[in-house]
Amino acid sequence: MNAVVTASGLSKRYKNTAALDNASFRIEAGRIVGLIGPNGAGKTTALKAILGLTDFQGELSVLGLDPRKQRNKLMEQVCFIADVAVLPRWIRVNEVVDFVANIHPRFDRKKCEAFLARTKLTPNQRVKQMSKGMIVQLHLALVMAIDARLLVLDEPTLGLDILYRKQFYQNLLEDYFDENKTIIVTTHQVEEVEHILTDLMFIRDGRIVLDADMDAVGERFAEVMVGADKAAEARQLKPLDERQVFGKSIFLFDGADRARLEALGEIRRPSVSDLFVATMKGTYA
Amino acid sequence: MKTFYWLVKREFWEHRGGFLWTPVITGGVFLLLNLMGIVASEVIGSQHGFHFMFNNNIHILDHALNSDDAARAGALMDMMMYSTTMIISIVLGFVVFFYCLGALYDDRRDRSLLFWKSLPLSDSATVLSKVVAGTLLAPLIAVVCGVITGIAMLLLFTITLSFHGVGAWHLLVYAHPFQVIANLVGSIPLYALWALPSVGWLLLCSAWARSKPFLWAAVLPVAVGMMLGWFNLMDGSFMGNGWYWRDVCGRILLSVFPGSWLGPDNFRTMGSGAEHTLDFLGLGNAYSVMSTPGFWIGALAGLALLAGAIWLRRWRDDT
Image 1 (tube, rainbow over the protein chains, first blue to last red):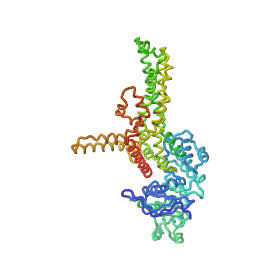
Image 2 (cartoon, rainbow over the protein chains, first blue to last red):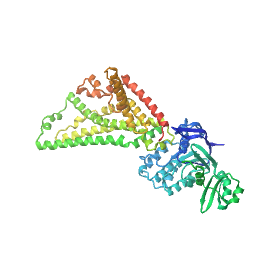
Image 3 (tube, helix red, strand yellow):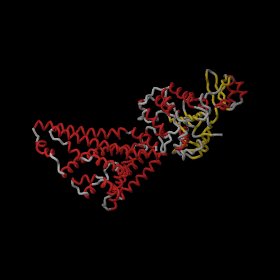
Image 4 (tube, rainbow over the protein chains, first blue to last red):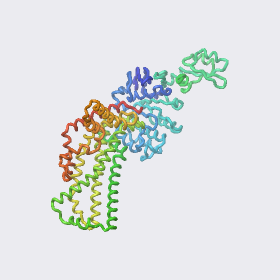
């Protein structure tokens, strides 16, 4: 198989906390992977390891390269957007396009200009005169014009209003993503990405606690709304989580027998955010 | 090579204010002050009737000069072009000092490092582009601005003289603007090598400090010097540790100031007098500093510091 990222036994310690604790995972080509975890779970450290921005223990191969040693070569094939507003504040739109066009071998200037034409950005505008949403439009236009094999997004829509957030993911899906590209995205706005993800990875305390494609998630997890009369019976099936809505209980099951669940009540596919909350219970306690 | 050109260009874009506008404005202010001085002296002169300066002596300028006077007039005008460049050079020293101190720190602080690091740029090319921008590009712009200011000064004085009926235009041919330009441009490579220990040290601090790079860069060497002085005192030997202040502290902090390779000792060996000043400023004398071991030791130390800065740039992130 053509794995884009293969990690085994990835560990990284900051002074007294483990940011990554023996994490192992594989990411195949042509996937959109959501790396989701609470604050401080090690998401950003994992991304930085993939991008060769930080040292770590363990084995990691990205597009067949070692990000610690072959970073320059790797960055021709990898793009990343690390939250909003990391574009230098002094640079102008035409300067940054000129610069990237001249130093990046896989940058398509025409494409970038076409993307920019759809925005309100003007060539002489400086980044410091732009709103957060406009900065991310500029960054996205640059990144989408690069024919990279792996795109890493670290909280790309943090602090943007809903119009920009929707547009961001829509542009990525419509104008960028195809079977040769792979996207890894971390975000707290789970509801916005769950419909575009093909794979889901939960990370907690530096460990991967869930790694499955979305179809498998739908098969494995089930949410059942149960009346008060059958609640005790449901609890015997060891639900992951239980919450109350309008006098009924909603149970979340991991790998329970479908037939038995159907007898209890109506089965639904759980949302990623409910799954997340159930999995991460007690993280901050 | 193309990438490197664009990296240097990026430095120019970011620091247009320091590299271009600072020397231009310094030159402009200098010209303005001179113009104000001339106007003031004209006004005071006409009020009080002090005309002796122009009326009596200056008419010798109308006559054809003998070769000795011509040489002296030429030297005077060359000095004027040097002096404007020197003033701009002092300003350049400050610009380069703070440029180096911020070059690998500012983008970590505002996190734009993450953007630059998302591009296929090697860390050595990034650091070296900053060295080239600070030690070759910035001085070149300063020299151009300095010479233009100097020429403007000459024209200013000549026009003032012509208002008094003194035609000094023919004197301008005795100046050596091309020689001055060649001398100044020729000393830029010397400057780049001489400034290496400072540039290396400042870039190292810039890449290393998690906050307040100025404090690290300036306080650390001064504190070490004071410790050395203290130990010397304890030893009972009142031998100064002047070598440390001059050859270590001075070189890693102050070598970014152009002409700091010229010392008072050097001037004395050239014969001190005003008539030797131009020889003193000449390229031959400037490059004689290359025959001292301190020059090359400093340059090598600078390269080592730069290697350290490149390594730090590779592994330091925005935290």
